[in-house]
Length: 112
Length: 113
Image (cartoon, rainbow over all chains, first blue to last red; front, side, top):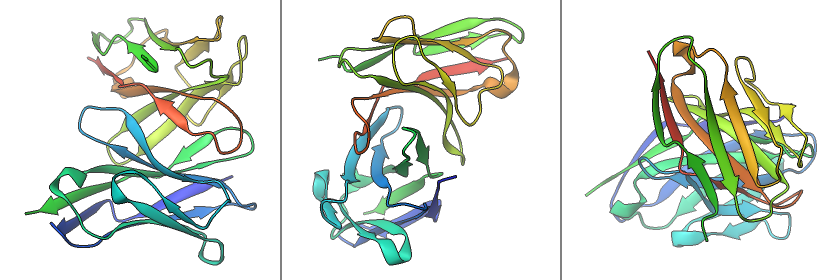
């Protein structure tokens, strides 16, 4: 069964600092991978997705993620954090049975 | 464009009561899903549907039933609510296999007393 592990349930960064949110997956075949963001009292919004076209994926709001098959990782990064980036971030994988599995989430705090 | 709409957005139930959450999508998506979100546990799949008239169990199906009588609607029912079902419920839909992402509703907050 596929699963997703997000290391660090809480991450704090200073405004302007690098954001790095970690995601590792377990899969016997290259999966489809996603990052979602959730702002308070809202649904989840797609940040970016990996579809095997390119290992470095660019998303909205300046975020990007790199698929590393050898490390089974899909970490999310942003060069410079803004206060508006404070939110909950979820990594997810879609299997061939069309089920999506989510990590437990990482809460990002941006310190002014 | 409404996307995915969930009703109601808030509901308080007493233990043993029943209720139905309605999810409607206007994107002609084949796949629809119900998740529950609990602190520290991420999103867990309750049930899903790969097309009109079909349903399947997810990770945590016990205590819930679903129906997909029309392609655009996916109903989640609780026959006898329990406090353990206090959660935020999200409906989502997806438009194709493989790399198609999920589109989410805004959530329904359910409290069972």
